[in-house]
Image 1 (cartoon, protein in one colour):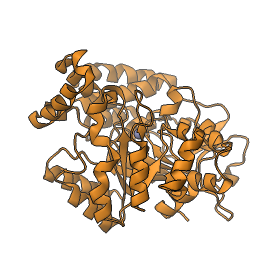
Image 2 (cartoon, rainbow, N blue to C red; image 1 turned 30 degrees about the horizontal axis):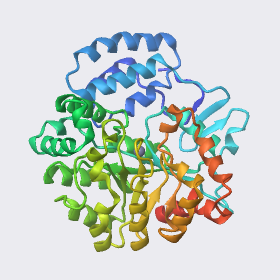
Image 3 (cartoon, protein in one colour; image 1 turned 30 degrees about the vertical axis):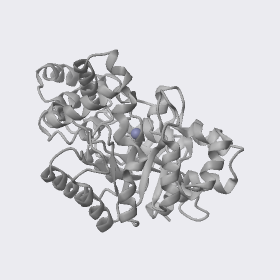
Length: 417
Ligand SMILES: [Zn+2]
C-alpha cells in the first residue's frame, strides 16, 4: 500500500487483507506492531475501506486485548498524523524537511557528546509525534517501559482480599462501595499505558541507537508465569524491569518471586525501575498504594548491592499528599548506593530549595535521573521541551548537577558512553 513520503527507510505497509488479518489474528502481545504502520498509509480511500472492514470486529471481540488493539487501529485510521515540516527516518528519528537527508543525525556521535536521557517514557504515541517532540526537547535517548498489568487479577480471591483490607482502612470506604471501587480499579488496569514487552522490543528494533527498552512482569502471578515472562524479556534483550507494586498487587518486601527477580538482574546486568508513591486514579487512595512505598525494597537492595533500583517518581507522587514518601526514598538512597530516583511527574521537586539541600545531604545528585512520564505531561498542556528547559534554567542547581540529572547519570547507568 502507498506510504506517506515523509516516512523514510520503513518498509511500505502491507496490503489491506494482510493488515486486517494481522489485527485480528496476531498474538495479543503484538499490540502496536501493525497499528504503528497504519499511520503511514497515504490514501484516504484506503483508510476508509479499512475502517469499514474493522468496525464490526470491534463490537464482536471478546478478548479485551484484541478489542484494545482494534480500538487503537481505528484511532490511527481516523486521525492520520502529519506534522508540517518534518519527516521520520527509521533508526534516526525526526528531522526537518529543510535539512538534507544525508546530513540527518539524531545526535552528534563525535565528542563532546552530551547525552540528555529521559528515563521514564510510556510508548503510546505515534512515532512521528514522539520523535518530533523528542527532537524539539533535545533528548538524545529515552528509556521506554512496558507495563504488565491485568484486569483479571482483581477477580482472584487473594488479590481481592488484599484490596478489601486496604480499602477498609481508608477514609474512602465511607464514601463509596467496594464493588464500585473494584470496577474502577479494573478499568484503570485496561489503561492505554499497558504496553507489552514485545511492543517495547519492536520500538527499540526500529530505533536501536535512541531507545532503551525495559520489560515488565506482573508479580502477583504464579511462578511459571514469572519465569516465562523473564525468559521472554531476556530473549527480547530488554535492559531492565519495570514494576508497579500497587497495581500489580505485590509487596516487594514479601513477594515470593523477589529472589528470582534479583538473581535475574544480577545475572543479566538488568536495572529495576519501580513505581513509588501513590498510583493514579483509584490508587490515589493512599492505603491502596502502600505496596509502592520505597522502604519495602530495603532488604533486597542491601542483599544485592550490584543491582540498581530506580524509584520512579522519587516516592513523591500523590495528588492528595504531594511529596508523600520522598524522604523515605532519599533515606533509602543515602544508605544504599545502588538506589536512584527519577523525576517523572514530580520535577516540581527541584523548584524547592529545601528539597535540593535534602538531596545533596542524602541520595546525592549522582543518583537523580531526568524523567517525564511522557506523554503524560502533554495532557496538562506541558511540552517535553518545556520540562527540559525548566531544569536547564533552574537557579537552585549547579551546572554540573544539571548535567548529571539530564544525562550523565543515566549514561553511566545504561553504559551509553
Ligand atoms: Zn509512568
